[in-house]
Amino acid sequence: MKQLIVNADDFGLHPAVNRAVIAGHTGGCITSTSIMPGAAAFADAALLAGNHPSLGIGVHLTLVGERPVTDPAAIPTLVDSDGRFPGQYPAFLARYLRGRVNRDEIRAELTAQIAKTAAAGIAITHLDSHQHLHVLPGIIDIVLDLAAEFGIKALRIPAEPRFFSGGYPYTAGRFLGRFGLSSLASLARGKARRRGIAVPDHFFGMLAGGNMRQQYLLAILDRLSDGVSEIMVHPGDDDAALGALYGWGYRWRDELAALTGDETLRRLEANGIRLISFRELGP
Image (cartoon, rainbow, N blue to C red):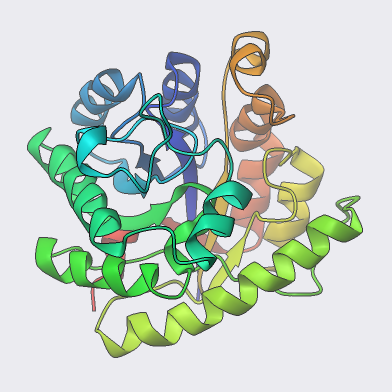
């Protein structure tokens, strides 16, 4: 049987993302989303989550790009002089690999993010992370400890098949980055399963991340194998507003159109794909 989780990242980042996640759930194929506890529109996202109980909600653990939930003074190795995380993962990774990031501070901040989400009344279905930092050696062990502590039963494993492109016109750098991420994620999968944490069998959405137009989404749907797959997506309904704040080059509206398109829904049915969320992945 082919089962599919369609997970929208960055819930809580901006009202334009929040609106699109709900539109993609009520009128399309989004079954799950990941909320950012430190993001500016977290409260709006939490309210929307309460009004849509059929939508699975995970925590998008964040160590880059946003402000922390913890008092910045308590986590000095994670933040800059303005109390913010590094803007992108290379800056964090460089510090982390040189041993300049305190892992106890990582544990404290991620604990605070999960606790804030639970305190908002959200039944947390899974954990994943912004820019996939949760699969880094050392951090994955902290995340698995926290999953056990909070009774969270599932985890994203961003191990996209190493030679799959789905027609996406990737660069060599993106391809190599995907290869490295998939390798780390495969190691994390083994650790998660040994700890009794459920994980999907397959993952898609790294190579075409931020540009999951319909042609690329359909190529993935046509390729799905038996078992549980996750497709990561990034919908939004206002490219101008989002693009002014985030220089990622994402095509948010195109992704929303793909997720709600009639052809997408027809292809799901034609391929015998059953939509689920991480909620159904208990051990």
